[in-house]
View 1 (cartoon, rainbow, N blue to C red):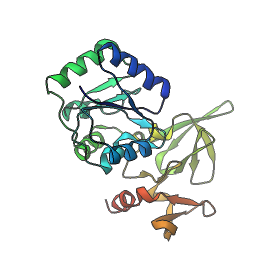
View 2 (view 1 turned 45 degrees about the vertical axis):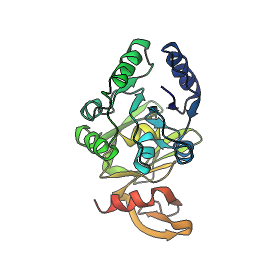
View 3 (view 1 turned 135 degrees about the horizontal axis):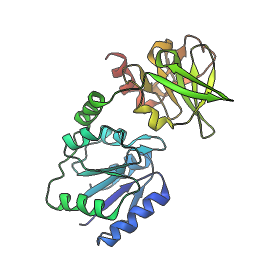
Amino acid sequence: MSRVVIIEDEKPAARRLQRILQKEGITTDVLLHSVRDSLQWFAQNPAPDLIFADIQLTDGLSFDIFGQITINTPIIFTTAYDQYAIKAFKHNSIDYLLKPIKQDELRFALKKFHQNKLQNIDIQNLIKSINQDNTYKQRFTVTYGQHIKSIPDEDIAYFVSRDKTTYLVTNSGESFIYEDSLEAITLQVNPKLFFRINRKYIINFQAIDEMINYSNSRIKIVLKKHKNDVIIVARERVKDFKNWLSE
């Protein structure tokens, strides 16, 4: 195997995968840590023989990479969460490994690869399958002081990440610390209601009041109850955002 690429935002996890691959006789020199880094690398280099891709990255999901470029390479996804529609991965003949990755499970995935049982990824069908298989959360539990509160999804204006902390913000303006990352929340919420417009925000469609063309081909979002918040759709997300609006 001439080239294997690891896409993993947690550097210790990337090095660990490197080490267990080495035990299988595979040397991996290419480690990518974000959606942006990966897009740049694939644009400048020939396709590898095999890709190991963590689902959650610091600036999005690895699905975002394969949705923007065509890669005719088998992919083995890695994830710390088994709620990521595992049936969809199996259905699409794409292997997956749950973290922490075990040597025997890695060996079995590599065996499937060598036997040509891993097929090339069809990212759109994969995402469609995930959306069909998932049961999305309709209530989100937050804790404040000694109190616990359950908030229905229709009462949520947006989720935002600030200073490495995730907040759930309601239509009434209440803000609560929420334990999961935006990457995890992306696959918990109903995609017909919520959209991740940039690295910091996931917004609720029902909370949108206005959408305004903004500089550098971006879009400014004005929310009904949060008109002073400056929320901008990232340029690379504008096309997907417009498609989402018309679904």
